[in-house]
Image (cartoon, rainbow, N blue to C red; front, top):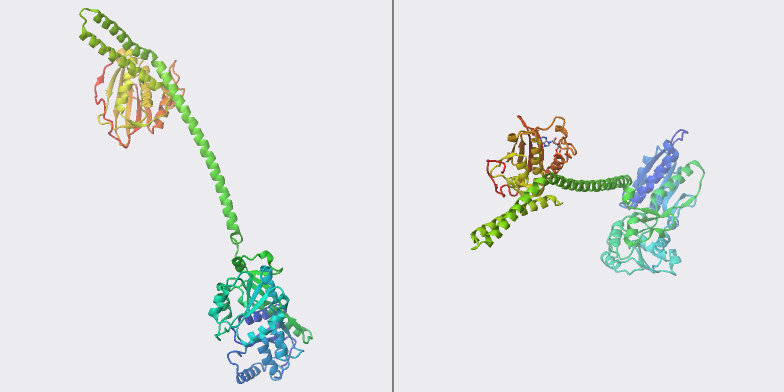
Length: 614
Ligand code: ADP
């Protein structure tokens, strides 16, 4: 082929010739390495061309001749500065037609094994990258990871290349002969091989040289075989071929085609720039392992030879989501802090509530004591009355017994009176004890009308002494409220006593108190205490329920504040207002007991004014 004219500013041209089609991945990697390296070195000053000879699918000499003729015509007007043959096959094709094709071009090769250089009689002045297939560094890797291994089995296929290569292996592996029993399995039928590799004892490892034809002559795909073998194997499998890594084997010392491509590209640039003849460079290899397989077999990364490349490392949660993890940790810490703060706050609140409750109970007790203090005169009278009656009845009884004949009928009546009086005194004492007792609130269904009756009984003497007449307006069919009866009595008693106080300046004939019960809505029943007294003093109304608010010279101003806290604790309402004419009305509303709205029947469904007892 005649060389075209070369102009100084013309780009340099390189042609990469591959032996087969474009499906051979390692050769594609090699080609891309060459392109990358040449382009980075020469940038736009290089044009790169590529040819795929397809000699594998079309092995005839006639086809080869036609391809050569085609290339001759194709490149007639375009001078190639360097022609790079990938593989011994491509190199052989080009060297055989050197005068016909690319006569004035520089020749070089990549991926030609050392022994093939001789077999193809490559002239020594042709430069290139020589591959030296050597399984030894892969075996070395296996022994780093499995230092106790005693047996190695090399798996290979039945192609001519396999047989040829296998014959060279004992020489390549002789350094290990003293510490390993080395077996060569090359004639297995696939199914038998898979069975056999599943039963291997510990201390063994396999080296997969890539099987593309098995013992039965069946054509196979190397990486698919590796996947099956590694899945079935009971021991780790290694491979000296880069193409097989990632399919289940642990890894090996392999030729990295991309790196070899770069080596080739660098050599091509040297050929273009310098006068280089017969430069042979050994292809670079790297030790590469599959991180997932190290995990599978429990092989320690610490045992890897220095410089080993670890592929397929699965990033830890930390590696993959560093920011998310940091953020989540910060959020968790913040949350923990907030929870802790809330717990502390809740504890403080509970403590404060408990203290408040204690205070409330103390106050309630104090209120009762002071209330009873106020009532003491009346109470003493209440008790001394029946006691006096008992005494006089007892004396009368004695007298009747002394008579001859004794009046047993009278004596019998006297005893009945004594019993009734002592019961009355006993009742008063019982109610007093109830009110003095420091008991926790105990909510139960309570009949408001019954409470009113009890309170009036307790206040009876006071009402009598103050000449206060009482009218009750008690609702019939009043639903039970949920209340602590003792506390409720305390509240009502306080309201009654306050009403009496408020009417102290009224004329004796003008002292009237009305106690009414009602139920106007479904949720609350109420009891009201109305008087015809002075009314709530201006300036006091807003602070009426605050502690220590009093207009009385002897008052302590606790009754209403205690009463409100008691009613609040019941979920009810205590309110006060002045009547339109005169006096004030205090109203206690309490929640109806849901479970027994009518459980407790009204004890005194009357609407009859109850005149002060005489
Ligand atoms: P105290 O009875 O010791 O004063 P309270 O808390 O029971 O304490 O009452 C506070 C104040 O509310 C009373 O001093 C009085 O001024 C006013 N008050 C209470 N009940 C009535 C009422 N029925 N009529 C007018 N004022 C009242």
